[in-house]
Structure formats: structure tokens, C-alpha cells
Amino acid sequence: MAWEFLTVYWREMIRFVRFRTQLFASLLQPALWMAFFGVAMSSNFDRFASAIPVPAGVVPVDYLTFMAAGVIAMTTLFTSLFGGISLLFDKNWGLMREMLASPMPRTHIMLGVSLSGMTKSFIQVTIIMAFGLLLGVRFFPGFSATQIALSVLGIFAFVGVFSLGFLLFSSTISMRLESPEGLQGVITLLTLPLFFVSNALYPIQAFPPLLQALSIYNPLTHLVNGVRYFALGNDFFAVGAHYSSTTTDVLASFAYLVAFAAVMYLLARRTFETAIVT
Image (tube, rainbow, N blue to C red; front, top):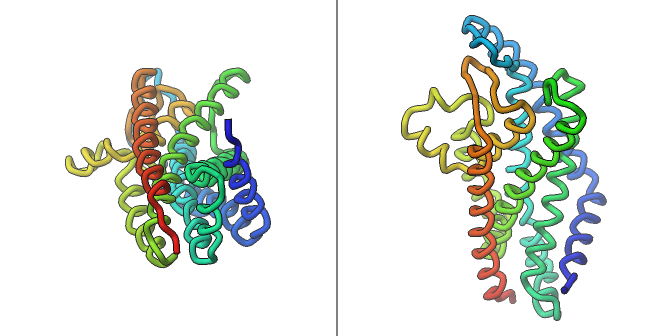
């Protein structure tokens, strides 16, 4: 088995650590979301939702805990979409031409970049969960130590496959564009509808029918479903809505993300195999 992709992976991780401004910004931003937006909105949503009775036998969840899963999803989305931008810099600096001309299979370039992006997402998720617990987020209510360990693995599985899909998508766009400004424009255009037409910050039950239909096809919705299932359980009440899900529902969300990542892999592979960089 060829391991050339590890060279690309290691270079990306060194770049991540050495650019300290980028490193601290990427780690601090989700914490600030939790500290400011989460705490401020939590007091408002909890006050409004307190008038709605909680169904008997259902675990109530405060808004800060509810949105913490959304912050994990949001951070993973942003990190993954920007993950391919390093390829664009490699093209502009001439490094991509050297890598494409090397004996290394071209698909190893996208695999190395994707694996490094997944690693960054895992680091960010760990920090968000640790910082959230300090702020009062109540993940894993009543879970045993074994259940917590399995739940963390489940969250990482969802984050990993979601991140892989969007990193491959970002790599495809980067290989087809010529300027970082163009890539940033595309990413900005995509992030807002993906983020707000999802269940990251609020229930989608109150959406208009069209937005509810769109949210079903939104990969971010399926990531949030998986994170909440493992972090909060399969039956809870939050923001005036009752959430219940079965193992089949979660497996369906995971299968959707796997299918999305597979399609993105095929697109990225075709793009790299036919890429011409002058």
C-alpha cells in the first residue's frame, strides 16, 4: 500500500501548527460562539420555552446544551470548507505543479489534505466540548463512563465523515479556481444557506414547508442529528420541541453523509486526475 499521502498530511499539520494566528483563531472562534452567542441566547430561549410544559418522562435540555451540538457542526462545516484553500496557495506558489509531476499518485494529495482537515476538526470538537462543559453545557446526561466513551466515538464518526465530504468538495473547487478571493466568495455563498437551513441553532419544525424540505437534504442537518443523538440521548425536550430518534434514524443520517462523501470523492478524484497546472 502506498503511503505518500502521509507526507501531504504531515505538511498540512505542520502548517496548521506553525501559523499560530490561524491556529488560535480556529480554536478560539467556536469557544467565543459558546461564550457570547450561546450564553446570551440561552437566557432568552429558556425564558420563552419555560412557558411550554415538558412531556412526562422526557429529559429537558437547556438551550446552551442544545446549541452546543450546533456549534460543533458549524465549526466542522467552516473548517472543512476552508480546508482546501491550501491547495489554491500551492497552485499560486508553484508547489502544486511539482506535486503533480512527482511519482506520488494524484489522489494522495487530496487524501492527505482531507485527513489533515479531519484531524483539525477532531481537535476543535474536543475543545468545544471541554469548553462547553466549563460553561455549563450538560452533555451525556446520566450516561455511564462506557456510554460516554462510545458516544464520543459516535460523535467523531459523524464529524469525520461529514468533514471528509466537505474537504473533498473544497479541494475540488480549489483545483478549478485560480484565486483565493473566488474560493472565499463561493464558500461565503454556501455557508449561510447550509447553516441557517439546518437544525443547528433552532428546531426546524417551525420552518416554512419549503425550508423544511430543503433542510432534509442538507448534510449539516444530518450531522447535527448524529451529534445530538450521541451527546443528548434519543429522547429529550428543548426550545419548546420534543426530539426523539431511533437507531434507524441515526444510521440513516450516517448513511446519507457517507453517500455525500462518496460522491465528493468521485468528483475530487476526477478533478485531480485531469488537472493541468501551468
